[in-house]
Length: 283
Image (cartoon, rainbow, N blue to C red; front, side, top):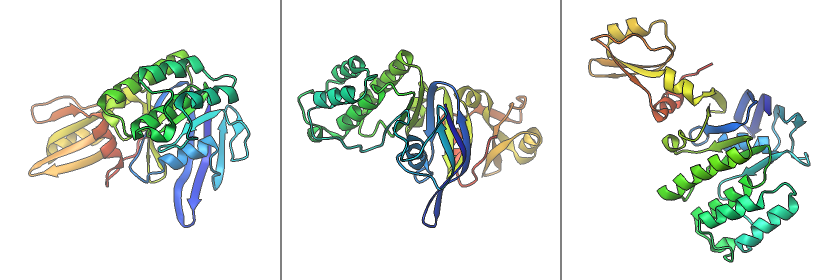
């Protein structure tokens, strides 16, 4: 379990995380979404104990997390992670030697699936293959919490599909909390159970993907008709084009009428409405 209580992180004058209180209680694959500079990497690094926070507390499985915590129970790989310039197979061996719970058979199987040359040194790999090695090492750790920061950087479309399959297989084999930060929104929707949206250092949304599918809608029509239909609903954004208005809601949709067009929002469109210049908040 991950528990954040009033977590704030400041860099000089900039407040990157703002009084975040959040509990991730159940095993699952979680997606962390946010614009560039929203605080995603800072949040993940803080949970992993890679950096100290300014105020508040972070606990993982009841253990307080700071940079001095010896075993955080967290496996974290950031984008552009670096490793010793050793052959890939040797890197996997080292990971298994320093961690008695390491799933070397899984890591080795994934290496074969992605056609990684075990004799090739890390620095000689492409960006995508470097990222894949880092991700395999992270998932093989069998830690109770796995944090992946932009794990599909440098992947082509086929590698991304394989990655999502690997993520699902890893979770099925060892259920735990896996949080994936990514910009490729629609692709990961088939893999995740819950969604965390962070914007300007604050959590805007934390709920199941199913809640987005059942409650996020656009309602379009004339201003008076849209206002009448959505007046008691939670509106997260609105656009006006010509004489038509579109309201974006997170609520039970109004009944369809001849004067309204009601459509479900894609995950990407929901995200845009939540963090756009008008940004919404769902509690």
